[in-house]
Structure formats: C-alpha cells, structure tokens
Length: 168
Ligand SMILES: *[C@@H]1O[C@H](CO)[C@@H](O)[C@H](O)[C@H]1NC(C)=O
Image 1 (tube, helix red, strand yellow):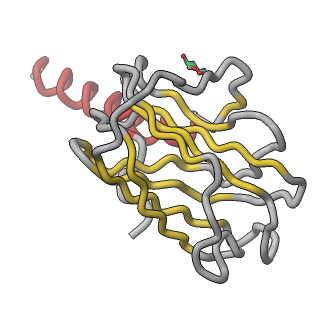
Image 2 (cartoon, helix red, strand yellow; image 1 turned 135 degrees about the vertical axis):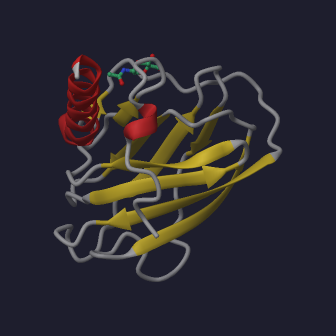
C-alpha cells in the first residue's frame, strides 16, 4: 500500500514537473552571450525549421542571426539567415534553412539576434542534425532588437523536456 502511494505521488510529481517546465521557461535576453571565435571544422549538416507566429507582422525586413551549440563548446553561427524563398519569416510560415557547421553533440542552447524593429515573432526554432535528437526552442514572443535572445538549457537538465518536434 505504502509503495502504491509512493508510486502515485512520484507520478504526480513527474507529470506536474514535465507539464510545468515548458511553460515555466521562457527565452531570455543574454547580454553575456559570446560567439565562439575559435576556428572550427565545418563538416556537419543541420536543418533549422523556423516557424513564424501567426501573430507576427505579415512580413519582416529584420536581419536574423542564429547561434546554437552543445555543452562542449561547439557552436554553429549563421550571421544572416537569408530570405531564401519568398515569404521567409512571413506570418504563419515555416522557413527551412540548410546549415553547415562544426559537429555538435546534443544541441542545448540556441539564441536568435535581430537587427530591426519590425517586431518579428518566431513561434519556435527546431534544429535537427548530426548526433542529436531534434530539439525545439519555443518563443512565441518578439525577439528584441540588438540582444542575443533565447535559451541555454545545457546545465540544468531541462533539455529533455523541451517539446521536441514541435514543428512537423
Ligand atoms: C548566456 O550565454 C553564455 C554563453 O556565452 C552562457 O554560459 C549563459 O548560460 C547564458 N545565459 C543565459 C541566461 O542564457
């Protein structure tokens, strides 16, 4: 009986925890974020799916950069995500970018940077690629001008409960 109660309690705690955290964690501005300027080999391929929110402006002229990486110092940096196809970053669109960069282990941080004041609102950014489960970083909030803005979940164990494959 005691075991059953303990089990039920544990399950309650686990489900509360896993439901609460994706909501409780938000993208943050990171004034101390540093790009890794060490020369790195560029031999792995990634795909980034960036879904623009349906409450974003109908289009944006903002320049958008992304940096992501793992806990061991590998970092992929794209200074300018080109508006490859017409409609990239338009309201309700999904933009796909093929990115080559250094090989990472599990991606556990991602920051976006924009210059421009259009108030572009990403819904989520999903990275899939080498050596890594796809990981989605949920935004649903405008990226402020001129500051790296996103998540670093490398050291706090929250990484597995970010909603994976949010963009299908
Ligand atoms: C900001 O970025 C640094 C890496 O440059 C990282 O160590 C730190 O955890 C980040 N802080 C937040 C709040 O994301």
